[in-house]
Length: 261
Image 1 (cartoon, rainbow, N blue to C red):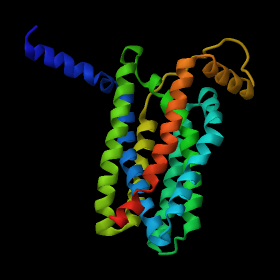
Image 2 (image 1 turned 30 degrees about the vertical axis):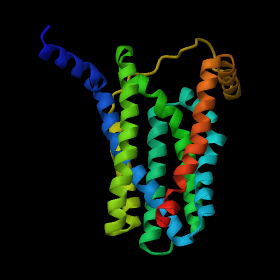
Image 3 (image 1 turned 45 degrees about the vertical axis):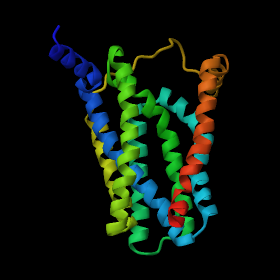
Image 4 (image 1 turned 45 degrees about the horizontal axis):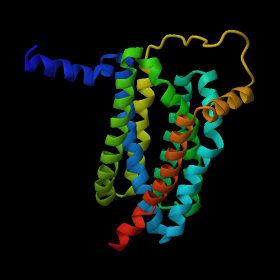
């Protein structure tokens, strides 16, 4: 095989997951939504510091958005196994879209107060916690097994692109037009995700374990027991939790540091 042939094969294998229509809908919709999400995330931090001048408040906002992950994500994992993952994602995207729109309207009308940001942050965190297990699990429903690793890799690249592009675009929009437009863009961006999910043609999921369904609490217990019994998985979860706890806490203080520069 010549060099051109090798390059063609390599390029195709690098993006093989995108040859599946369902995954293309997912990738494009999620990419647009992620840019909007990170536009709001960065703009919200600067706006919160602008109206409060409090570093402690920035940390409180981060806490309000993070607490739901501890409270609800395990339950959300059970829901992702028992109900339609697509429907869970669509419902939570509509939820997030409405929250972003409410914040945009409050800021446009110049009536937004710190407690509004705290409440919206908590319910935003709740929606994210309820959708995260379904968003991770549904990838396996979008491609064949041979393309799953590639789909997961593309998901990671998509997240990194969103975290890079979103704050950059958000900064320009914040400076040129104000924070409300960042929140409005985020609200509209969820339509791309909702439309992509609605257009997918998914086969019915096969029941993995024959027999009657277990009680949700039993499923939750089984999941915790599985993690506890596999040291590698437990280690990965602990490391990820530590880095997320301290890393995202650091990011939440960036607006205050930027003002001091």
